[in-house]
Structure formats: C-alpha cells, structure tokens
Length: 444
Image 1 (cartoon, rainbow, N blue to C red):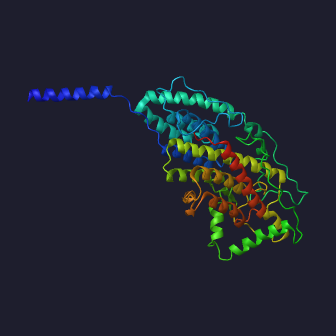
Image 2 (image 1 turned 60 degrees about the vertical axis):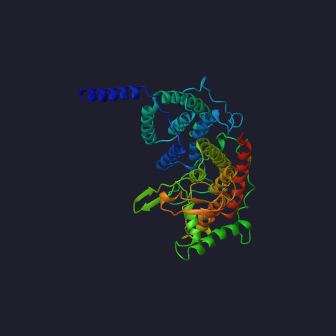
Image 3 (image 1 turned 135 degrees about the horizontal axis):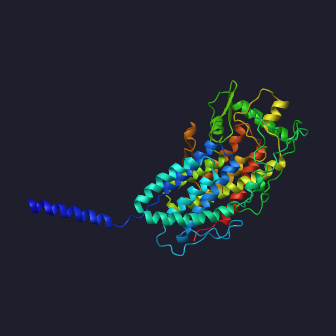
C-alpha cells in the first residue's frame, strides 16, 4: 500500500513537471474576433454620435493597418504599397519567428480604433479581456506580436495625422446664404449648422482629388410649374402623401425607416430634446460586409480584405459626395415645401443637417455595392439584419446592387431628397467604387 502511494505521488510530481515544461499554445485569432472589434467600434460611434463622414474615416485606418500586417505572409493578397495616397511601407520585422501576424493585426485594429473614437474606455474593456487571455495562453508570443503591432501603429498614425483632418477642426462654420432661395438652410427641429463643410479637404485614400467624380449638375432651382426642379419637388411631396395614406404600414415607409441611418435624429418631449442614436450609412454597409463574410465562411485574411476595401471605398465616397454637397449647396425639400406648398408638411424621415445634392446614402451605397460585388460576386443573396438592434426587421436582398438601389430610393420615400440627388448620387458612387476596385486589384 505504501509503495502504491509512493508511485501515485511520483506520477503526480512527473505530471506537474511535465505541465510546467509543456510548450505554450499558439494564440489562435479567428475571423469572429475581427468582427467583434469592428462591432465594438460601431457601437462606440453610435454612442459618441459620430457624423457619417467622420465615421467613415474611423473605419478605414484601423482596417488598413490590420490588412498591411496580415498580407506579409499571404499567398492570396498583395500589399497596399504604392496604391494609397502618400502611404509608405509599414516597418517589417527582421524575423517573423515568434510574431503572430494575425494577432498583431487585431491588436493594431483595436489600438488605432481607440485613437479615433471618444469613449476609449469602452474599447479598453474589450482589449483588457483579450490581452489577459492571450498572456495566459502564450505570453511571449503575445508580447512580441504586440510590440510589432505598436511599431506599425506608430507608422500608420504618422500617415493618418497628415490627412488634414486636424486642420479642418479649426476651419470656420458653413455660412448660410439666406438671400438665395435655392441655397441650403438649417432644418427643424434642431436647425443644426451644416456638418463637415470642409470634408473635401480631407486627403482621399485613392481618389486623385475630391472633384474626380463630380456629378452632373442638378436641375436648376425653379418654382415654375413644368420646370424640372418643380417636378422633382412635387414628386417628393406627392409620394409622401401617397405612401402615408395607410399609416405606417406601407412598404415604402418600411424601406425609408430601414435605411434611415441618421445619427442626428432629435426627439422633442415638451421642454426636453434628446437624440435617438442610430447607425451611420457607412456603418450599415460595414455590417453588410460582415454578413457576406460570415455567409462565405471567410478566413481572417479574407475578412480583413473585405473590410479594408469596403471601408476605403466608403471613405472616398464620402469625400466625393461632400465635395458636391457644399459646392451645389442645394436647399432641402422640407424647406421648399414648407415655404411654398404646405407649411404643415413633414418628411417621414428627419432631414439631416447638410445640403441636399447629392444623396450621401446613394453615393456610399453605390460605392460599397461595387466593391462587395467584386469580392463576393453578383446575385449574392443575403439577409440584412443590421438594423435589428434599432427595432427594425430583417430585409432580404438578391444582390448588393439590389440593396444599393433600395437604399438610394429610400431617400425619396423618406422625403429628404429629390430624384436627381438619388439617381446621380448612385451613379457617382458606382464610379468611385469601380475606380477603387480597379486600383485595389490586390489578388495574387
């Protein structure tokens, strides 16, 4: 019996010693972790109420950093070197041994995202949880991968800080021209200043300039019956009247609400005013990117590639669109209708605080749909559940182009855009998308 106990103790000691000498496990980074990081950033931007253009910038830089790290060992994708404006190669480690590139990419994504948002603590909670887990799994691999990630972060941040964003923070507010009836005026209920009037000064990622895909001009402002502008104005008014006959049950109203994506919606209750927080247009398409990646079981490289290309297209689409918005400076339907047709009319959606032409949703949706079609193919059926957190049901689409067309026309149903802004905006966005797709043909 004594000998048996001795043997048992020996086995226990040997087991303990063996476990102490057991090699640390490799840290596995799944596509789900990248989706988690992106989702966290979206939720924080909703909380912080980022404007749609600024939100597009927040998506692009972290994805680019992650992509450039990951493709160093890729057999499928090439680097962005020589593609992006003023972008120089990221630092390369002397020896990749001991560095987990997928881990470095995820760390870079979270760290750069944290530098671009306001509520940093909300992403720090996620980081701390993951970092503690990775330290337990393999502290050496974690530390080496993190050190390399921070080398890349420093490089990306130096490039990022030269895109004129900081300079535009000090530029003057947009001046409203009240003497010209065709010019944009702030709209109810908050009558906010026009947001980001200097966004066309932001350095594009791929475009030669903000003006590269300048759309054709909108119909000349006119209240003369029979004029093109008047026809488009009355279309907004009449469509609104028609689709509200049956209350909130019409398909058109459902479409308008599904694609609202307005982070600036204000609600008044007596003497109180508060904002209902919603996703931005770009974030909705980033959500669709996630849906497509999950449906195709995309691996980490493929997931990061999809996010990166789509976010670059969205960012450049906003620069292109905002360049036109504050050049044409066109008045919104709500203002014209209230002043000249029906003082009590209200659009179904709240009018966002910037000029009308072209439609931001149309431009961004057009650009994103081209990139996603290029990556995942045409006739890609998907169920869009992006708006479920905001109390809206799933909508089904037979292709990305189908979704972009619906997103564009939703602005007419919502009563916030004329037909020209929708159609020309969608065309403008697709031109941006085709340009980005051609420049970012990175498959090996």
